[in-house]
Amino acid sequence: GGFRTATDFEVDGSIITVTVGTGGAGQPHNGGALGASGTDSVFSTITSSGGGGGGGPNSNSTLRTGANGGSGGGGAGYGAGTQSGGSGNTPSTSPSQGNNGGSANYAGGGGGGGAGTANSITGASVTYAGGGGGGQDRDYGGAGAGGAGGGGTGGTYNTDNATAGTDGLGGGG
Image 1: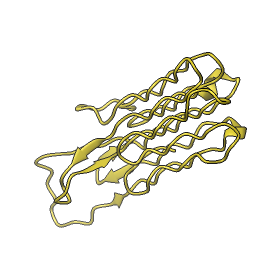
Image 2: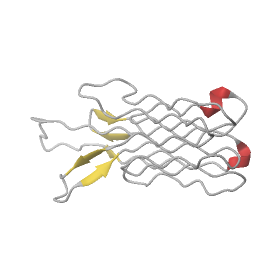
Image 3: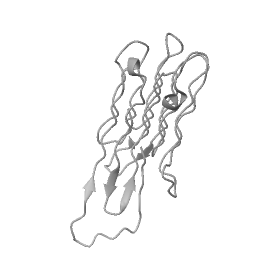
């Protein structure tokens, strides 16, 4: 997911709308679909994009590519090919709101989700907005890890064990 901060943001006592993004749901391996992306978080006029869902192991290369988002989802493994992770910082902001998802490796393992960003606004360092990991194909490699900051782990072959992104942190599934 995306993570944004602001300085000199004036709060004048009026009501400010705050929306905390939810984590995206992981998808079962057998469906071969992309993991769901996290939803956006909004503070007044500042929007941080949800994390990109991880790619699903599927013969359709479009579904293997991790989804774009604040941090991109990891690409899914499929046979002996590789697949790219989704783009982070989507839509583009300055400074960047997130990182790209990892590419799946040649042996069919899923790529890792893009790493989020740490912040100490709560008094302790918390990492927010990780992308979802890509799924594993067959018995090759392993599932992609979720990006630091609540990104869900990709599923492994013939199981329904992909995990959702963590609610409140904006990670993808």
